[in-house]
Length: 232
Image (tube, rainbow, N blue to C red; front, side, top):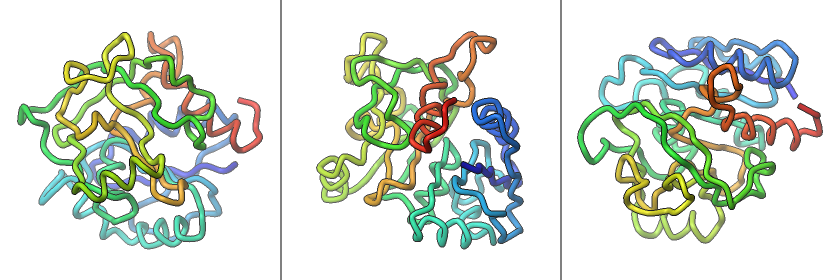
C-alpha cells in the first residue's frame, strides 16, 4: 500500500506523519503539495494536523479549496482511502467528506494533553487490531475539536457504526470526566458511510513508538497495514 501526506501552508504534523508511515510500512511516503492535483498513485491519502492557512475563517475552511482537495474527493468517491488527523479531520468535515463539524472546545481554550480513547467499532481498516476493552492514551492539541452534528446525522452515524473512537477515562469508562472538549456522545473520531474516509482529533502519530514514551498509537497504523495484507 502506497501512502501520501498532503502538506498545506501551516501544516505542522506532516513530518511526524511521514516518519511514522515510513517506519510502519518500510517504504517511502509521497509528499503531496496542496497546490498540486496529482496524487502520485497513492492508495491511502493522509491530511495531517496543524493550522492550515492559519485557521482563518474556520479551521479547514480555506484548505478545502486547495487544488489537491478536488483530487482527494475524487479519490474518496472511487473508494480510495483518506484519513484526516486533527486539522485534517476539520478539513474533511469542511469538505463534506465526513458529516458534522468541529466546533470550539467548550472551555473556549486550546487543549494540549494526553487523553484516553476507546474504540467504538473494531471492524474498520484503522481499528481492526485494537481492543474494545482497552483504553488508549493518545495526545490531543486543538482549540476546535468539539464534534457536533444535528440529531438526525448523529443517529445515522451511530446506527451505521461510523464512530471510530470515544473519549473515555483511563479505566475505559465513557463519561463526562473523560471528554476533554464537549464532543457529542464523547466522539473522538468518525468515518463516512462508505467506511473509506476516516477522521480523528487525537494524534496517533505522536505516540507510535516507545522512544516517544508511548506506543498506544501504533495499533492504528498496524491495523491499516494488516487490512492491506502487509505485516507491519
